[in-house]
Image (tube, rainbow, N blue to C red; front, side, top):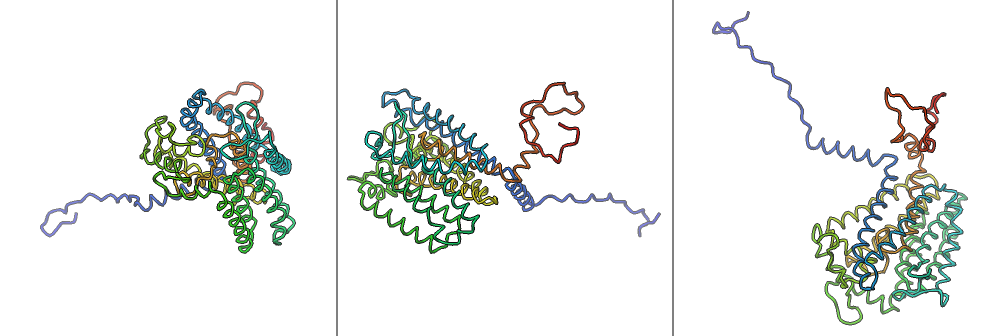
Length: 453
């Protein structure tokens, strides 16, 4: 045994354990970012975002319609749940339309483009016939269906323009005609101006702005040159400026941007100011569901155009940010569907629907926040109004169908296992006939063996 200089045996020291490397905060953040990136890149991400986001917006909208419309219904000597029941009925019908649209093949959507356009033009022209068309809040854009049910054909004009223009541009792209500016503009722009003219005959400039946004979105997706895009935008802006300058009502709405106190005169800005009051009194978490003060007659159109203000008052900043996040997720999913497809019709239709919903949400919320003039357009899927809800839910069904039609999404859906009727490991399977959900499910043919059902 070796000894030390003092003659004593050396002290044996315990061997040190290797230090455990702890993950640095940067590595943890990087791993979290990588996981989030992988989750966003999954084939079914857009499908789940569209389906889940639209359903959450619709359900939350039903709750807020019930809360915001009770006082208005009682003031009209109606039951407190009157508007909620009508909106719930429209949501049920819209859910059926969503399901039908999500299961329809793309060829059938294209086949329906011209009939829907012809029907929308006919109904929008029928609005101007005396005795048939109705005027609501100064706009001649409604048709009475009997009783308390009305229909606004201009809302269906948005869906008609998206489907018809997508089919038109897709056929011209297949024939390599979109490189010529004449084929890009004709007949798309004249038909869009026909719809805009029928809408403006009734005085509804808000819906006309949404239709114009859809037109520009489609031209941008079609690859319109900058000079052509700027030219059409300049013409539309000039026409809009003339329409605003020649209408005292529109000039008064323009003067209410950023108003914080009611004014005297024509531009009293009562609605805009009380919308700001509602948002300001909500705080972070709101005054509580049903506890809004502004809906007691102070805020006009509390359950339609200004339902976002009541949401801010009752649910606070947390509620409004949640609504904004849902619309942002819906818009992202629509852009993703349009960007990843190889089918030109799907790209134009998905882009048009995304432009429609996003632009309408921005215009409505911007008006409530005092950043834009009050255009009188509802918040998609959220505000009261069956005429706006039905075509919007059909358009959401289009996005769901397009998201499912992606090859990677189809493969992922075909590999999903049913929750019920699954074979247990080591367990005997009762001798029963095949379950219906097993027969309806699409399976990957490569994963089957020769003796498997």
